[in-house]
Amino acid sequence: MSENTATAATPEAGDATAAPQTDAVATNGAATTDGAAAPGAGDAATSTGGVSKAMIADIEEAMKDVVDPELGINVVDLGLVYGVHVDDENVATLDMTLTSAACPLTDVIEDQARQALTTGPGGGLVNDIRINWVWLPPWGPDKITDEGRDQLRSLGFNV
Image 1 (cartoon, rainbow, N blue to C red):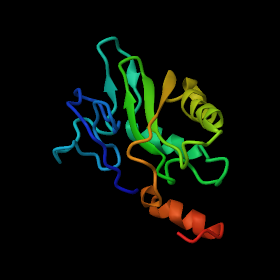
Image 2 (image 1 turned 90 degrees about the vertical axis):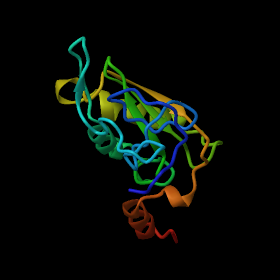
Image 3 (image 1 turned 30 degrees about the horizontal axis):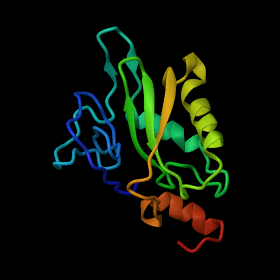
């Protein structure tokens, strides 16, 4: 997976978020902005209310079912998922971007993400999702993972 960087402030214990312009911990490098290991990155946690929080790695894996409608490649391998945060109510906030700010397909991607994360056996990984569309840092081909590059090459793209 490509290394995405994010500006960040103080993360709460158990958070694993890479949210440009918000409190964050990088998910693609699993490190805080000071280079230390992210506390609880990818770990499951239980809040004081007994709600089991989804694991970040499981959410990222499920997001591979969300396919960019124009390119036919999943949003994780395209590098469109900048970060994930799961709150104590097991609601996931996804910091995402698009290949173009003018993309008219945000509703399609949001519907696919909701389907991938909130449905399935036992009701899904999370109770609900929110997508925080971010534009900084801007998306570029450098955000595409090696797997994403292989998929694009198989479609005839020169990446």
